[in-house]
Amino acid sequence: MTLQERFISYVQVHTSSSEAGTTVPSTERQFDLSRKLEQELKQIGMQNVFTDEHAYVYAELPASGEGFEKQESIAFIAHLDTIPDEDFSGKDVKPQIICNYNGGDVALGSSGRVLSPERFTHLKNLAGQTLITTDGTTVLGADDKAGIAEIVTACDEIIRSKKEHRRIAVCFTPDEEIGHGAELLDLQRLKADYAFTVDGGEANDINYETFNAASARITVAGSNIHPGSAKNQMKNASLIAMELNAMLPAAETPAHTENYEGFYHLISMKGSVEQAELNYIIRDHVFSLLEHRVEALQHAAAILNEQYGPDTVKVEIRYQYRNMAEKLSARMDIIDRAKKAVETAGLTPVTTPIRGGTDGSQLTYRGLLCPNLGTGGYCCHGPYEHVTVEAMETVKDIIKNLVYMEE
Image 1 (cartoon, rainbow, N blue to C red):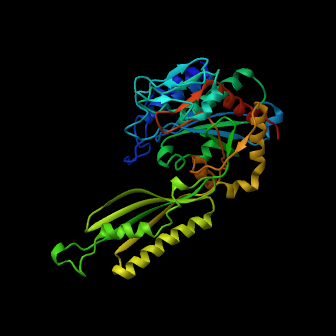
Image 2: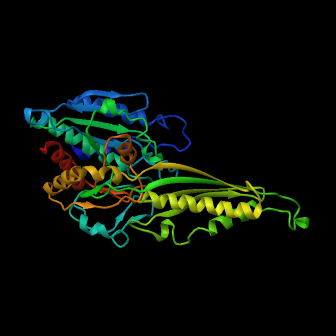
Image 3: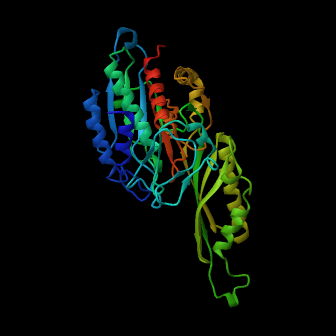
């Protein structure tokens, strides 16, 4: 089976995760792809293939040749799920395959949407390649089924080549899109010295810097009485919530920041006179700056409590993940190997900070250093998502280069 055939077969399996799920995986349908991959990994000759009760798929390939037996083992990780978006989910994906793409506009099925180089300027660089798009009604699922296809195909070709190589471990995880993909990954079963998630953007991307992340749930208790006699008595929870948001720097939101700049992001709000709730995600590449943002929210709440009374505003903070660069800085040789693998594949490596997090963020802090490689995909999490076969083939070669590379 070719890499393209694998990818097309994977994206047609519905694996959207769910924020409302109370189990792992959050949706039973993720097992559909787990079991498919389990069988395929066995067929290509991977060893100790296993799917656990949470839909994690594990496999390994022992080192081949005396020169590699004592070298560090490497794991490759990708996630099964697509985004839990009801408007553009991973259900009923109908990929369009455009051979020898001309670099121009591509109508996305009959949806009325057009993939245009006027909006997506990188498209002109994809001319001549085999472009795979959505039909405009779903995501494509290149995030992260391109990563899965690249890993499986690389393993298949390594086994067929019979070339000597270091030990390889593989894991495909559920629920990455809702932030839980790394939580139950069994590091003892994986037994890797370091790993790469294959879950990034362009084929030459290498990511080892992520945000530090926290979430904040702010509740406001009001006091509702008849508006005709409300003077000096009513506390309007919705208005107090608006006051709190106005205390935050207006320019420090996702719409006004880039690169290493952090932000406060109001993701939802609801309220009445009696009670209100604000939910934020807070991000910064420097942990001390993230803590400063948390303190700023807590200080705003303290000011409002002085004005409106104790316990009017409550702030609940949950830390989510850390910047993996803090741990990887001691093992930059891993990043150097990734750069060499990209160069050997004919590309110039680009290291960019992720304005988000990956499974690797959590895994790195669990003890498995885990930077991120690209997949060759673009515009994930929406109907304009697309990838080229050539980019996926290049990522597959980057994976093989890492496996064959001697220390």
